[in-house]
Image 1 (tube, rainbow, N blue to C red):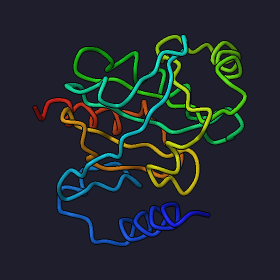
Image 2: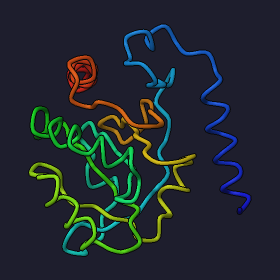
Image 3: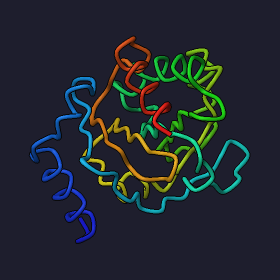
Image 4: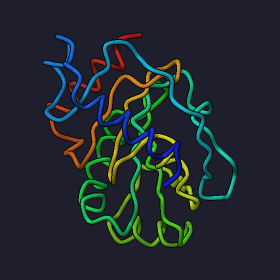
Length: 178
């Protein structure tokens, strides 16, 4: 494990034990909000056509960045809820960016999306899995909520029911906070 990986893991641990601000009470269970937005490290990935992408491509939108893989059972279970959330809220102001860490490549993800009937999520992949380590993911899935300026508002480590009324209302509130 590199020094950067160890530091990232230590940062995640510290963030998880810090007292939460009063506004965290409105966040769904397990969602850790930052008192003030924090910079998101630069990560690079590809879309389904192999075109290079970065989070900067989504500036101006609220982004729910989900780090996942087809081999991760909890990730597989939550993926349909992310697809439904994108169908419900996706548009010019919001996007779910499901970023696969599958080293087997985009064909593996395409096959999984076809199996579960994914219709609303774009395929994004980081076959190097560097994004997972750069963002300090202690495991999969991990999801970051990113504001329009590209800063992290908060994160949730582990799976969630992303299309639940509570979660959708929470995200709607973040989209409305222009």
